[in-house]
Length: 348
Image 1 (cartoon, rainbow, N blue to C red):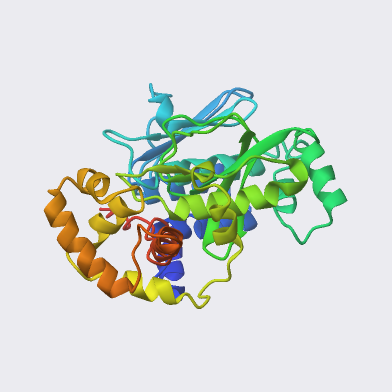
Image 2: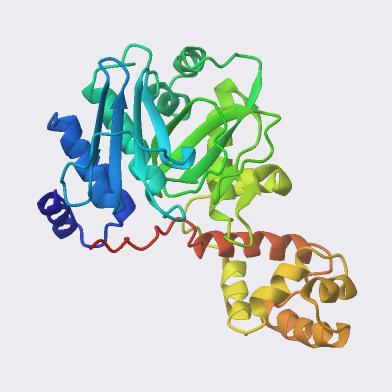
């Protein structure tokens, strides 16, 4: 297993452990390896014992990070580190201590691989339909068929939640979900009722509510919302908070010419730039901006004189507010680091 991980790392040295987890399990599933090998992979990636239990026939297997068998006795495992793979199949990680950034993806891929290995749930697995549903290039009738297959009802409004594969889900709401390829990499997409304005996942973006034929729009706004996250201060963003502006941002071409963004970049060069602009775009007056930033109004006045001179317009007058708000959000999207995956976990 270590040879396999090393080979993947040599093919793409910049690949994160999260991506290598997916690549690793993909190779193992293609190779149709046995359950012991799948557990050995999970244990090696997580750095702790990985286990499997089958109710029929009754069987328990535990493998340590070095690929050795541990006692075949099912231990008590924190539910947060345990996942049902299918009817009667359960996998787990025997983690002592806090959840590590890649535990969720290791556990998810292990559960999927075990389910495929044991050939259960294939007839009822319609997860690929979600990719079709969220693709605007797919015919609208085909999207509606996919929605019905997933148990969604035409005429009912839903919203899409997006999260990176390494997101932490203290609570995982139920709904059609899958890993969807995007220009930003693989994204975990989940469809929830329109009433779900918040999710516990960090980081995550919650898209606008639409009917099923327009869920691709909800998906794109959820991606923008996700990229506006800034954990730990901002763990989840609701697209509704930005009104129609988030739709414009979702449909804007990457790298489009935005002269105001360059001006915002110049303001951000000041040590107080980010704090000041964040306060100004949320305020209606200088004094309110000063309160938001926690500085004296005279300090904010001095900063705004520099901001106005750098931007060439007053953000509190006329279209200045709209220009600054739009440029500020585009700047945040272009500098977003929320999809950067955590550093690999050191294994002994």
